[in-house]
Amino acid sequence: MIPMSAALTEPAPGPALPTFANVEAAARRIAGVAHRTPVITSRTADALSGASLFFKCENLQRSGAFKFRGAYNAIAALPADGKARGVVAFSSGNHAQAIAYAGNLLGVKTVIVMPADAPALKMEATKGYGGEVVLYDRYRDDREAIGRRLAADRGLAVIPPYDHSDVIAGQGTAALELIEETGPLDALFVCLGGGGLLAGSALSAAARSPGCRVYGVEPEAGNDGQRSFREGKIVTIPVPVSIADGALTTHLGERTFPIIRRDVMDILTVSDAMLVETMRFLLERLKIVVEPTGCLAAAAALNGLVPIAGKRVGVILSGGNVDSRVLARLLG
Image (cartoon, rainbow, N blue to C red; front, side, top):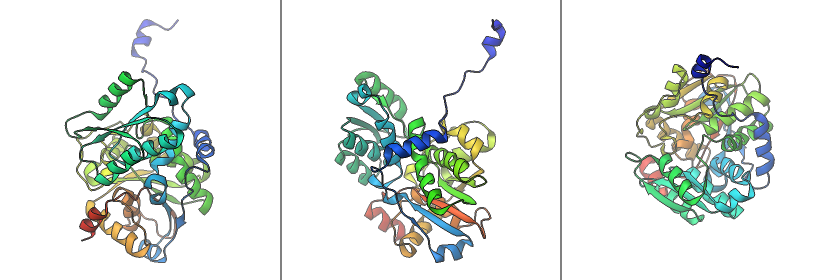
């Protein structure tokens, strides 16, 4: 029998963490549905960075971002009664679109809690895919509480944007495909919001490219991930203000943080000005449109935030959902 004092002081176990086996299962589940997005290179980018850069173009993924991978995997993995009841998610845009689109493909009702100031392009796309949109004020309301209330009232399954094992596993398939195509990498730069893509990518890199140094990259104004990584605990910050609207999270997740702390080399930050110049570079040199959030990893690699000269480096371009008017205004 465990002594009463020990029972009182024993820390509660954390949530079960996904493994690379879950990433492999997700790859099988989304095969033939999610796009196997191209990996492109650029001699100009290589010259600028001094490295051999391999860009994984998730801006060309279905619904315009890597989020489709995790969303489809999570909904497809639900039991039949869960699919019949429907799902609720909360997101500023890309996860919202992905959940709505995946639900449409799978015949599952979707309800999305979105901030009232979400980009119009992303909101209209979410509605266009068949998602029911519930608006909230990101600076005053708790989106997770709204999602939980809707789930309780309507019997919906909650699929959060990052802190969900099936979501993390699905996102990890992007890095898995990248490494399968390029072979082992010395470093991998990954955009960071709540940590689903970074945690999943770290699982894939550890399994398929041992020795690869994985770096998360977030906006300067929203450095909760960097602070959490360096302080060894989840740090919550006020809602940040940045053009990287897909990375305006206030904290990492209970599932994403332990994986990031274990398998990631460091968390870096970039300024909005660096994101704008990276958007311009990718448009002019690689001829692709990438949204500000999707440029986080590339901005770190192209601006030499860590030494990568002579290395083989993967860069995940996470999304391309940017309104043409916003793109014109930012690039001026």
